[in-house]
Length: 297
Ligand SMILES: CC(C)(COP(=O)(O)OP(=O)(O)OC[C@H]1O[C@@H](n2cnc3c(N)ncnc32)[C@H](O)[C@@H]1OP(=O)(O)O)[C@@H](O)C(=O)NCCC(=O)NCCS
Image (cartoon, rainbow, N blue to C red):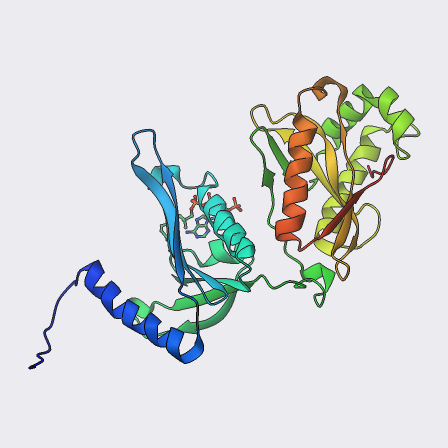
């Protein structure tokens, strides 16, 4: 048999796959490695046309997102973040220890950093002084045990079909106060914090203390409350959140309340499902406790 080496520009995907299959066979023989899985999440319009997506591979305990792209007119609406969150969920479900991406500094470096990725190493020497960054985010179980609380990054907000759940912000006092006063008679009977009708200043003070604790992550009042807003009208709906966290025991407590005029629509079920899933998937939590009468506001 005679063998000749050919140059091929832009070779076909199946021919490249042939080489890959050969490499994977070697990996199996040498280290008994399991075959990688490939994945993609696509955003499609109602004609089935792709408007964005992300794709990559799940290999040997690391999930690599090789492609992430959102059509220009859909940018800045949260799709990129949502795609990365789905990839991260997949990585966690597949028990990956980390998720990784690569990017030039002029592509999406700060986008990934906002999502909690850190630069593992970088490569220079490309055209026009471009620098290629290799970033990763560790997902190993127990990731919070050894970290100073102030350095913990929790990706927010939490979105549900009808709600947006986010940490309190300066200026939230007015809308929270209105909702507490609307519901005061019920809250007063159930919630230890609702002894007296709060003033707008009391509610604003709480919102600011809570916003500060989302940075400090102290395991103390006011803990990590989340305010719930209706996605369509941006109306304040109620409060929930996390408290008494024990990262070593992977346990957390939660509580909630909803304003009178929003009760009976299944909104709280929607919110509690979301914060429970978030705790399991993002906070490495295995036990969630809810105690009657427990809340912070
Ligand atoms: C990067 C990309 C996927 C982001 O998609 P998107 O839907 O616009 O992102 P989101 O709306 O979810 O933005 C989330 C946050 O990241 C910020 N952000 C979005 N794109 C960014 C970028 N390219 N660089 C820095 N920050 C960015 C947003 O301002 C937003 O910030 P906020 O939460 O403080 O408001 C999109 O800009 C894109 O397709 N770019 C071209 C392809 C590309 O560069 N892909 C990455 C290759 S490594």
